[in-house]
Amino acid sequence: MAPSPIDKDMAELVIPSLPLETRCPPFPLRQYGGFWMPEPFLPGMAAARAGFQPRPSDVVLASFPKSGTTWLKALAFATLNRADHPPCGLDHPLRRSNPHDCVDFLEVVFLRSAADDVLAALPSPRVIATHMPCSLLPERVIAEPEGAGCKTVYICRDPKDALVSMWLFTKKKLEAAAKEEGSPPKLYTLEKALELFCDGRCIGGPQWHHVLGYWEASRARPKKVLFLRYEDMLGDPVGNVRKLAEFTGCAFSEKEEAAGVAQDIVELCSIDALKNMEVNKNEVLKFCSQHPKVYVFLQTRPKF
Image 1 (cartoon, helix red, strand yellow):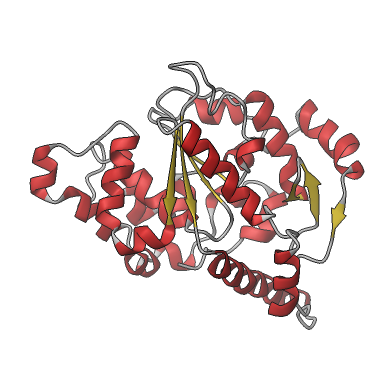
Image 2 (image 1 turned 45 degrees about the vertical axis):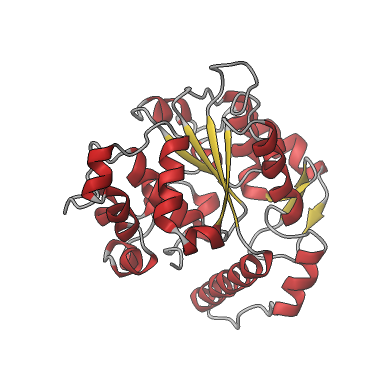
């Protein structure tokens, strides 16, 4: 596919001029809009900011990396699509596909030249994810006018746990790359990861600015932005699924409550259930294999 003009301009003119960080594998990072973002994703981010046209019924799932993204994708997809796909159904999409294949990343969609066609073909309500900071979202996502934009759900996690999870994930990627090349894996210690994290030099960092942006947006526009904590969701998953459903305009009916639909969704999307599904063990992610720039990072299943 031929790159879009925005992709080309970003790659040839803007990216080389941005501050560079190479100590945080597996990607080189560039400081864009005050945040350190993976270089391969920047053209997609720029294209999304310029071209994404949200529908009022859209739900954007936002997160700092390794903060519960996969779980939130599964819960939101199952909640918003429960009329067409009952959570107890044996043929539920989440039993056949990874959550990342059910809910795509906005910046990855816009790395493809056919992004408009891909998004236009999705039925409402569309559920789309992003790791972009709030300040870098397309302006139309959380537009001020009544009836404009769409709804955003943000999940945050204890920074220590997010750091350790990302470090383990990165080490796994480095080991896999080294094995393929027949060379020793690159050394990437937890101490080095911590040093860079505390300096804000990590994917999506500074983490505290990433979280703060969405927290402030949720306080200023509570009908547009829902702020969730990973730890709270672990403690009360059913209650938080109810909150998610109500916020997105599809609260559970009395009949659904009596039937235990919220609990069924939680059980379908539980970490144990997802990681034990065959589709999450062996298959390559469809969405990342469609773009070689992200395939190097996301070529294996996320760790549940």
